[in-house]
Length: 611
Image (cartoon, rainbow, N blue to C red):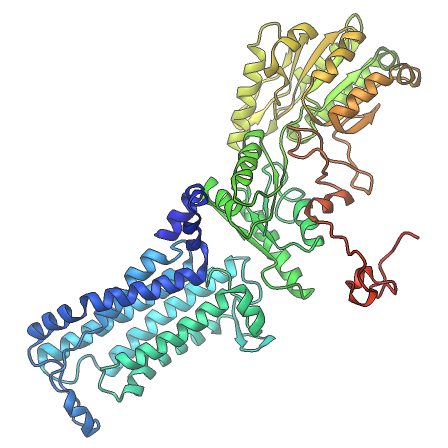
């Protein structure tokens, strides 16, 4: 409970640093042990006295046991209730209740506790050492253990956080040795649970008063669980780390289930930079996310990457993402999504005791500027090209051309062609209900703005986004800042004005991912100030082309001034993307032999270098 409260109110913990201790597994283990002990001690004497009065002569002792056990005659039984109470309170207060392993183990413990209670109750009420028969106890134990084994296998095979351990038996201190037994793993789990639970009774001498062996066995398994759940200790000891038995955060984009998602550019560049990655899956495509995450983990295993280098989290709405950003282990954030979401993450990261960078790609209308010479070369062809870019992928690209500057007095054929294409065009399916509703709201807001006229607007069915073309004068455009807001979908706003007015308007635009300029060579030569203004507003300039055309190469830049991105110096595509997750370090006056291999004169790693 306290751990979940910490995750939910992590901003409060930032104000009271002592509360941050709750996030550490070691601290919670120690507090859980102390809690269980306090519960047992607090209820011990009262419980024993109460149970003695209820049981009278206590549990009978077996006649075939050692003579030394006869001294235990009259000892009250059912002390396991104290153990269960201590465990339950400790787990509830300090456990991660979102962890399926905790529920599986707690369920097995509770079920075996109920079985033990039934057995002891029969012994006490009948005043005989024979409670449940051996067959009855073994059958019940096997059933519970098989259910636990099935749940463990189902959880681990559905979770991409534990690659290679799904149905395998690991050998301590031989980390590369895994024996995959398939569904026979369920039988192994059942045999282990039943065997160890009965071994406790055998150790104590068959009389069922097993508190000391329980303490020893519980301590041993507690230590094992702690070590495999702690990445540092599991790595040091050469045992498999089990996340959840218990760096860089990447938020998946809604509109790119592959390229900007689990194994997208953010993840690839972060891993290439040597950073472990935690991906927060998008709820629009959880199935694809799981498939890709499983593939990433398998690839990491096959290439001998460190265990835990990649993990993925599902669900939780905003709570999970916020907790990851606030967590001390997170050192940077990659995000592709809305302006509101990106700025919220920026605020969370800045409010941390140790602020971290957030590389967020957010909002861009990607202006297209058309000069008279470009219209003279062919208005219809220009309109066809713009419409194709506008409706590509249902208009749901981050580089969608949502703003067009068109010289007044020209472009009638351009507008007529664009109008015809939009009115006869087919609506596209929007990626999810939220995007669909946002598109409807944003286009409605633009249509209702003073001075805006609807040039063309097609009909759309449920879950669809239809092409929409709006026009407005440059004066009305500049008087309403909301007209610069993104309409995420197949819609664009055409702004009419003189070339001089267009040139004057460009510096007043927000930061953009792209800016496209259609002009002749002579017009480019005559308008260097316009090119410079576009350079200051966007991360990628396109000449006589459209922004949705993008090549992933060394020279590409997919970024731009705010609000296109949170850091206009970065790129989320191409070779430059890796530098977001690198921190430069200078090795001044260091002997060559002490330098990292990457920097040594002999170049032992064979890295290409500039001479």
